[in-house]
Length: 331
Image (cartoon, rainbow, N blue to C red; front, side, top):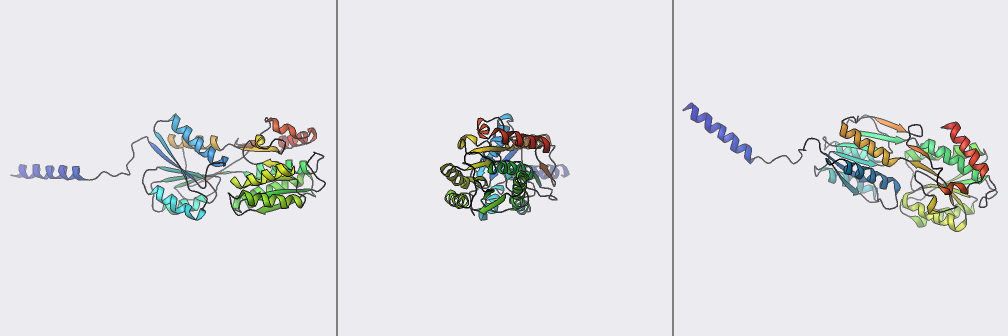
């Protein structure tokens, strides 16, 4: 009788187990599902294009990696809700993005989804075991771009005027911009000539090219003859005005010489794709540490200047000599 009862009990357990719904959150060992969360739109934004390219290339190299690119649009007020909705599908092991405002959003979303990890580039955030950040040392890039802008504005180049005034147009103000980029840019310019002044203006949008063009024109009328910009798609308005009014531009993070030959006379480079690929390789190998932040700059090989594009040759020989000496001395 006891044997019969034991048999029935085991059968009951097996039948019940067969009826239990499998947990959809379970992942096959060795697989990595990545959500590339774009805080904006990729078109015309090299930061995001390189972020996506790096992730997709890792997926091509590793059959066990799946990548989803999601563009959250330009309404920042909706980003956190969209991130939560994407993570709530339980499809992703890792979220990777590039925006200084993302860490706090990820921290909020992570409270509900404890199994998901978040890696944010171009941001600094420590102490959360779900989050890892990598911040570019943009003070370094701003310093040498500012120095180049300063050399140009006090030069005898064809489009330079007699006023010592450089311009910086930003989409919006945020900590990295106000604590590293703007201070570094004006510091670099003043190393070329202490009398140089900075005309700094904010658009209020990452996609308003008309407003950027309007600001650029007003700045030219106030004496600016060299510009830089951190403004996403809006920056196209500044470039258009610089072309029309024959003023110079130095550019952050990507090779943009060919988009305005003779106008864009210097370009920094940010190795976003390289960094993304290295990050994902470390995740796959189990080497990624969370809860900490890293600062990456020129010496680490993630920031630099593009000398080998023919557009750089539009600078005078004197400016190139002084600029290259500055780079060699400081970096």
